[in-house]
Image (cartoon, rainbow, N blue to C red; front, side, top):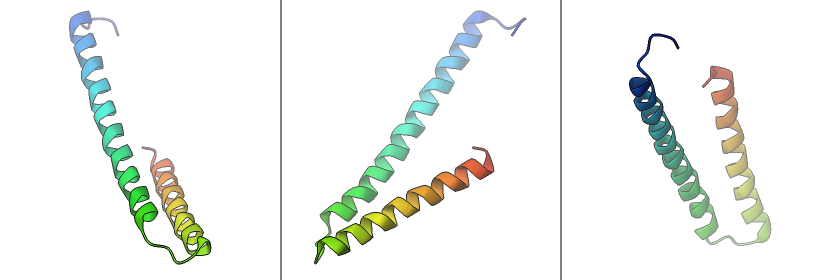
Length: 72
């Protein structure tokens, strides 16, 4: 990137890295809370628990597929 002041470039890089880190924290906290909901439920059997975990996994797979197809 010729013609751009290195100080400005470094500030932009730091800002982008900070935004990426904050978004990653936000996303990880969301999925952690969703998983905790599954974990804390009173399941009647192991099969019920496994079904709930399977639904959680499917939600995550669907979300990843949407993100990949939209190019984010």
